[in-house]
Image 1 (cartoon, rainbow, N blue to C red):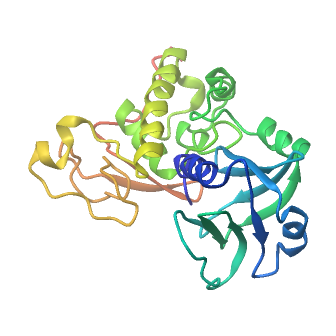
Image 2: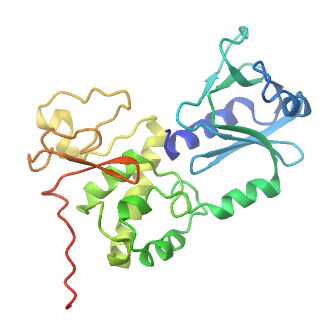
Length: 278
């Protein structure tokens, strides 16, 4: 499933391609046809993301809400002279003066009002990529919970936009075991996680990939081959189970945590043991 940086990057590109211009809105597949007809030819105001939710705004405070889910794709084609016929199951097509975009396979594509958009934003946790994000909202949930920090980071009502890659990499960079209970963290530890996450995700928006290794652990610095993976990017532990840790050499571990694979290094991220007197 795409992580938050992908949605923010997509929102930025959709805004650049279509904002402030009338846009043709159709549903070649037919599942969004009625709503598309209500928007067709109207001015697209812009697009924004909140975590893994995308909102494409049209005049009159009307929003196309999109959640890509596991297999969804929203392919943008800028600077085209001609728009080809749709191929495959295109649920939504946007066509502007010099660009078009096709949505396929999304788990959600609906026409929403401003109040519906606001309700989703209110229920979601703070998004590290938004200027209005308040990390204290997430910290208030984390510090009160006995759930593992690895689960809390992926809970979109706690923190919006973080997926499996950022979860694994953020905890490795912090030297924190994914099963450590949220309530055992100190406020400074949470702030350090947040302060590391924000620039990591911002870099993902800029490059379109997730790179989390520090300068001394890049392929060039270590004299190793670049990572080859369909997710791209240089990482410490994500999908590197069984391979040597880039920092200490111990084999990276894997375990299922709330139905998702969790990756960590047992030496660099030791199991948390409370110092509290029993």
